[in-house]
Structure formats: C-alpha cells, structure tokens
Amino acid sequence: MTQSLITNSEMETIDAGEAFSKNISAGAVVALFGDLGTGKTRFIKGVCKGLGVREHVASPTFTIVNEYQGTEIKIFHFDFYRMKTSLELQEIGFDEYTYDDGVCLIEWADRVREFLPPRRFDVFMKLGASENIREIMIEETSA
Ligand SMILES: Nc1ncnc2c1ncn2[C@@H]1O[C@H](COP(=O)(O)OP(=O)(O)O)[C@@H](O)[C@H]1O
Ligand SMILES: [Mg+2]
Figure 1 (tube, helix red, strand yellow):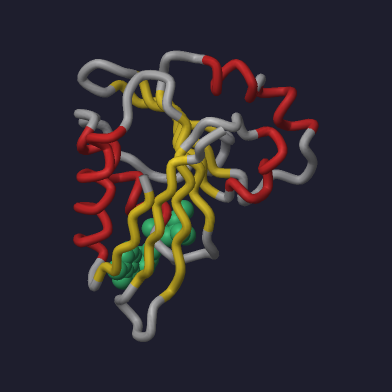
Figure 2 (cartoon, helix red, strand yellow):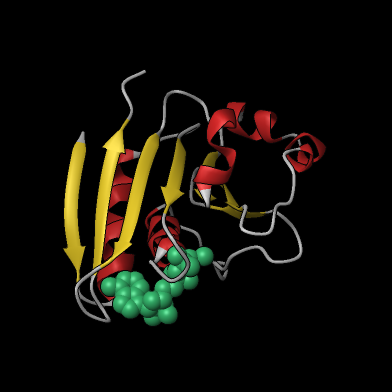
C-alpha cells in the first residue's frame, strides 16, 4: 500500500489520519517523518479519532510516550523531538511497546530509525506550496 495525498487544512489532515486508521490493527507501528509543523500531531489526532479515543490527543511533552484507550486497542503516542540519546529508548523499554498489541504512533521517527520494526507504516509529511498545504505520503513497508 502506497498513498500520496495533499491536504489544504488542519481538518483535512485530521480526516486523512482518521481514514488511514481503517488500515491498522492491533500491534501496528506507524512511523511519522517530517519537520516541525508539518502536521504529524494533527494526523495522529485523526488516527486516534478513528480508533475511538475520547481523551485529548497531544504530543507528550514531559514524557516520551502518552497512552490512550481506543474502542478496542490501546494507543501509544511517542514524540522523540526532545530525545537526547538512544539510551532513553532502553529506559522506557521502547522494544516492548513495539511488540505489544497496542498501536504505536511515532513522531520524529527518523531519530529512532534503527530501532523501528521492519513491518510498519511510514508516513512522510512535508510543507506544501502555501501555508495550509501539506503533502503526505503513506507507505506500508514490505519487510
Ligand atoms: N494542511 C494542514 N495539515 C496539518 N496542519 C496544518 C495544515 N495547515 C496548517 N496547519 C497547521 O500546522 C500546524 C501543524 O502542527 P502539528 O500537527 O503539531 O505538526 P507537527 O506535529 O508535525 O509538529 C498546526 O498549527 C496546524 O494548524
Ligand atoms: Mg508534533
């Protein structure tokens, strides 16, 4: 599965995340790549909405991971923007999260690239030609 789309507003990116959530099931890992402000958190909000999360979804700031409960599955929302060394991955037991039945949604995935499981979805996000445009590419890895 590879999919390219362009969104024209924050809401469209949330909707794209919600639509994409139909592809994921227990244990899925979704790695999001893209600079600050490209919409990673908005996309994740949509994924969580699609999975039935009712809590507020925002990037974890004081911790590396937030946990939400969806209708059927748990969601782990990571943000590695502030991570200094990969030792922190061991401290939080990152591996175990990726083996868990819960869904892992990972912002700044490029910072943990070598620790990502081979089977996952990659979501690449870029700023578009004008302020509210974002380019999104979703790829299911084949490993
Ligand atoms: N098409 C769009 N998709 C997503 N966000 C958009 C879009 N257009 C403008 N924005 C704005 O860009 C910002 C994206 O923020 P956020 O989702 O936190 O990005 P990131 O997590 O990648 O840093 C928000 O302020 C949002 O309102
Ligand atoms: Mg973010």
